Length: 210
Image 1 (tube, rainbow, N blue to C red):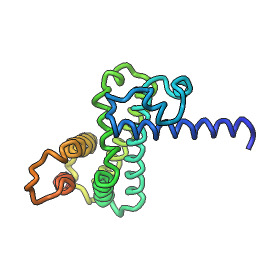
Image 2 (image 1 turned 90 degrees about the vertical axis):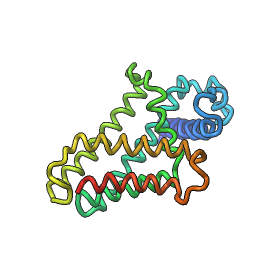
Image 3 (image 1 turned 30 degrees about the horizontal axis):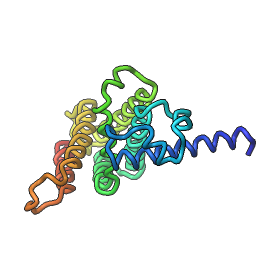
Image 4 (image 1 turned 90 degrees about the horizontal axis):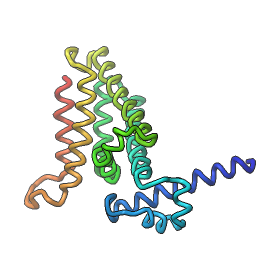
């Protein structure tokens, strides 16, 4: 490995360590209460060094949002590779979303960034555009699977794939966000777990495809 390649690798590793530090502080203090100094301290960097990699907290939040979207895209790609037909692939995606909700809830939390920083999206900053491009890819992947199911007969033929894909993504992500935030608020006497509500939501959507 040459000197330039080594420096590039070191820069990427440092950038990744900063993102991990930001994630940890965001989860502890909340995005709105975190400062760049907090992140620099956790990453064991000076503020000046931190600003070399990220201009502000906004860039870091969208970097984490991109990570959460990439996880979703990976889940969809895996389901597309393993499923037997369009409907089965969507079933696998729903199961993967449920596992994500149960085991990696922090990424559900970071998906709230899209709402909290909507003013940034309207300004078309490079960091927000990268997230929007990936979100568009995710939506088109769902459209493709719905159309595949319509063609192979596993999904009803009168379904509008474009509208259903938008509904699926917004319903899934928004509902998981709300349930995640309200985990400790629901009636403690209930006889079901919050994850069961998420599962029921997916079951209702999948049933509507038949």
